[in-house]
Image 1 (cartoon, one colour):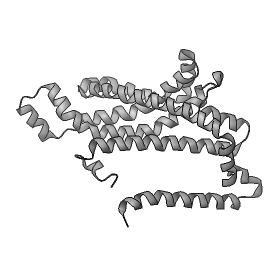
Image 2: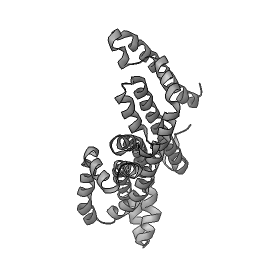
Image 3: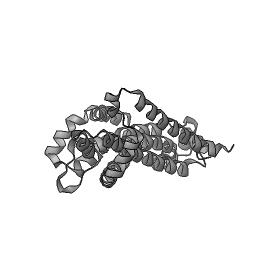
Image 4: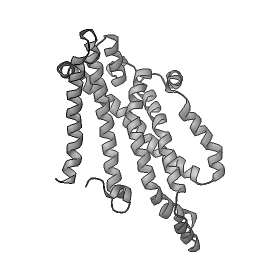
Amino acid sequence: MNPRLIRWLLPVVLAVLALVGWQLLHHALPPSRRFLLPDLMRLAAAFRDHGADLLSAARYTALAALAGFGLAAVVSVGASLLLASSALVRAALYPYLMALQMVPVIIIAPILILWVGPGAPSVIIVTFLISFFPLVVNTTQGLLSVDRAHLDLFRMGRASKWQELFLLRAPAALPYFFTGLRISAILAPIGALTADYLVGSTTGGRSGLGITALIFSSRNEIPGLYATALVGCVLGFLLVAIVSTLGWLALRRWHDSYAGDHK
């Protein structure tokens, strides 16, 4: 069988098995507890009844996730170049980057509400903070992980610091950068959904998946909660697929880690 066909069929087969297992587990639960895992028909009904609301919320969350993710990608490149420029700079700044990553979102949220107010700006900032650290760490590591023989060759040829940076270090860092992008692409929708739950606002008639989940929870609509979770997963898969495709297009011709992808 065609290897590419197998790569596409395996996730589909596993998805079918997961759905069958879901339905079997629903019927295996005591009748009084089956509401915790609604059957597939009730889940499908939730998508039918709340499809418009879910689509609107998904659009809002996707835009916030893309804005925070894109901002993190751009800022991380500049920050990585700064960190890679000097061991003293890394020693001075790296602990503060780690501290920023370690501060729980639930603590940052009320501070952001005081600074910029609830809604999209706060959601984008939280998404940026969650997406930024994996990008800057991976990209900085890539800029520093240059083959010693290649570095000596550049220095023997009296290459300038700019030539060394853009002709040697930057290409070597690209696989690391795309690895960071993949990690951040997973985190960005989670960050946007969580931020919307904490700092989002229903004023103005717009809200994301976080507020939608909160509304379903307050109404004790379990199928709606599962539907919201599935929509969030789809957003994450789409963003990761886009990043993976961009990485493949950029690196497939010269880097082994991407040469076998999409075959």
